[in-house]
Image (tube, rainbow, N blue to C red):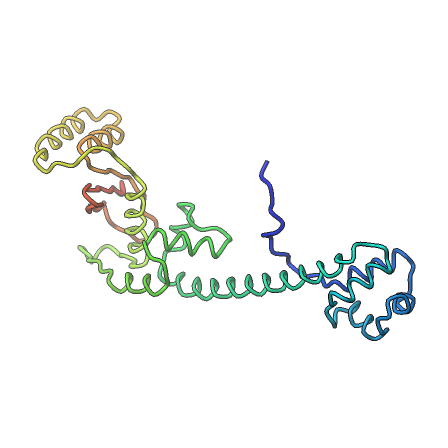
Length: 254
């Protein structure tokens, strides 16, 4: 079973120490005035603490602890927890706001339907940004925009409609998948004729073709991927170098 570290969790709301003190007095059926008399803490100050308008001090925590016969650091520790929770909530809000701003720009440059279909996107915006940055090999929005500005594509036919965003997303997703695929074989350009001969035999046999082609390519140090296209991406495939290994990607469009 997974364990939850409460010290690292961020509450939805920071609870002021005054709320705990109010509940304690209610359970004891004790009036604020009585506690004020016992501790010597002026009633207006005590009332401000209970209403969350004033923070409790270490001295006041000791006095209240003695009066209620509980640990004298109890309420002071609650005060420190309240301060930490407020800081954590502020940080979370700031991070979420920044993520929303980044995502608001990012979503205009990627194909949302495509990345949803391949399981990259979810309801978590910060996780979505992390996934997209990983796929495109960037660490910031500025780097992503520069990569987008460098991207170019060429239509080979006026009869086919190409969506630049769909193609941009598909291309970099293919490159990302290639990096996730590891093969141990070394690619040797001198064996090009041999790999072509084996592939021709596999095409002729036409049995378990995709699996056989992938197996043959991998043995020769070539990565072979089938990545379905989504949206307006009228391409049959592409090839590129991934380090020292060539990668061949097909869409099975035809």
